[in-house]
Image (cartoon, rainbow, N blue to C red; front, side):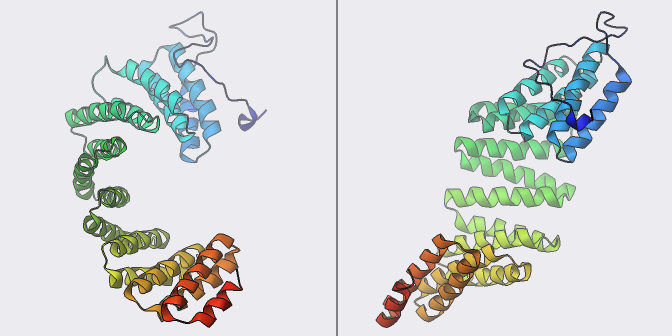
Length: 342
């Protein structure tokens, strides 16, 4: 039986022990430190590759071997990675159990980066369990560990996660302040991937508060970064956010410019869904300006893409938009034409 065919062991309690044998526990017949290290490495690699089932099997076995030989530091590391796997699988209650076991082993020992990471993992899991108060408490604990260690990247992650916890609780201003602290550190570290993530979080938080101009500022920074990184698919999504925020504040010309740019990139990518959405946004913006002829052109093009996608819901929306724009122009014959296409 290959490793991938072996069943995954489901331990109900991360603190339980299987039979192993070692110098520390001679009554436990199978413990082996070298095998534990191999299993840990295999599990971490499988996690990185997204093979969560193989990762779970290898890491759970690693926990038991390290427990058998009496190596709490490495056992804690294996426990943390099992928690990460369960987090990736969406099993947040199990994530809490494994991460808590990791923290129990590390708390009596000198502060280390792994403790900060495990506390942060618990905070994220609590956020997904809809317990924002606990999420905030654990992210603050994580932040304090990284501050004591003077670990800049750890502080950056903790501020970012703390911001997400405050957002889950509805404290949007605190969420923004934490994200801004994370952004400062990310910029110092010149970590463009994290900068992009934080700019997205800041833009979304400002949008939720109704601070659309602030959202536009952060979205524009993220858009420039996406261009620098040649990430056109992300750029297409950011342009949608920029167009929506601009439309909301009544800046229809800017909304049109962003939607046209989005449409151009989407056509280059062959992304029909984004083309359909951009054409819809363009039509709405031209409608708001009273330029019904251009709005009709956009809606007609959206209708063509909707039919290409065989999306009947969008097709009905496009036909409805066309009839409304034609009514505004007084083109009643055209209304009947589109009415017959329903």
